[in-house]
Image 1 (cartoon, rainbow, N blue to C red):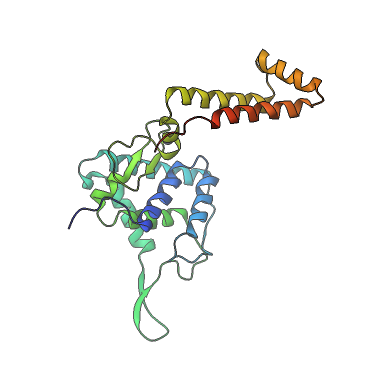
Image 2 (cartoon, rainbow, N blue to C red):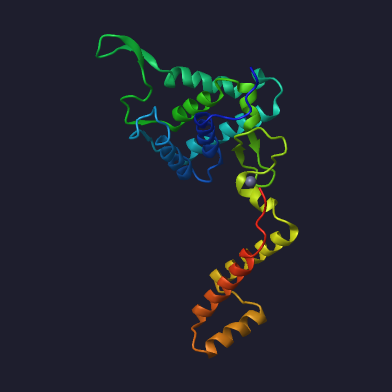
Length: 240
Ligand SMILES: [Zn+2]
């Protein structure tokens, strides 16, 4: 059978949940991301909640995942990726579906998180990570990448050796030099307008002209902003 080079929807989802947890900038963001993602996994009850946890404990687990992802990318032999063993152990003790007698008298597996109202973030992360990596781990790890620009981890649906930047950074990278300089100029102007810092003499003159025809300063500033947007939107959009 030919090796598959594209992740399935579920696999992509499990991988992204773990990676978004690692990339979150605050511990609140990390936990909120997990709570939002629960709704996307159909075998998990939608009302399950991730318990609140201290910043220290969340950060510790974020660093742990980062270390694992780093190792998955770098290590030649998977057995040397020591943290995989940790997550599998955690999965075996906290996430593995167990057998029970059902209402109809049969003995079968109880779905995980079946009658739980809440769970810890590390249990949920172990669940997602193991589900992501449990089959074809040597292939799966090729989908894990680290952005050359922002240094966040990300997951690509298809394996492509040329991918160097995460989706957020790559849009900017696809721009030509001219497009990029216009993009940066627009961003700088937006920042200035927000802070109401000094504008260029030409822009100040434009504002004066508009105010002399009955516009307020705010309206004139808004106009300059729109003008820049217009200028920008006529650019050739970067190809994919
Ligand atoms: Zn990036």
